[in-house]
Image (cartoon, rainbow, N blue to C red; front, top):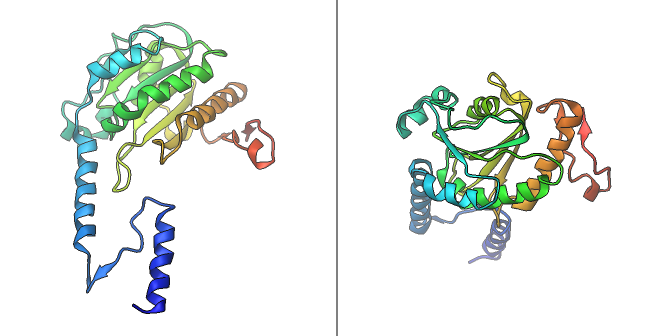
Length: 257
């Protein structure tokens, strides 16, 4: 092996330590090594499983109830099957029946949605919700969580209207990839109501410790956005996340555009 080949291998080896992406893969002639082909096939299978595995609602509800916000209500969208969920995202945004959601008046409501990765919700949602409750409970009234199946983000707006939440936090399984299959996202909407669009929301993504965003950091960002949204009177493109500005030498308050 030439000195140049050794240097290239060292370069890619060190770079791969900083990413889960498949970069700098070796070749055997004009093809990938068998190990890399098999690894790719296994990753693809894991991603498909993360999408299609059904949410264990009973277990999740029991774990969520242990946080102390009350027994979670369980709702579903108008989707009738997982195949239909993938083909008809519009139906995933509409509720089938919201009678299980108690009507009250809370500063913040939580929706735990399976989204495109029920696997992510099962692995991370309870710990993330617990951290959100820890950071938010001292300043705001919190509604009992709602578990939503076959759900898209906008289903939360209907739930929020029923529950009368001033600010909505949707915790949802993100689309799996070939590197990560269990990533969660938070979608925050101030003054939620049916008809809100993505421009009205703030997203915190890539929550899957230890390789992604930690529960503590995600909850810290969410708390900062809640505070900023209440001062500004809206969320979305007008609300900027500067929760980490203090650590960069700037102001640690939210920048409201």
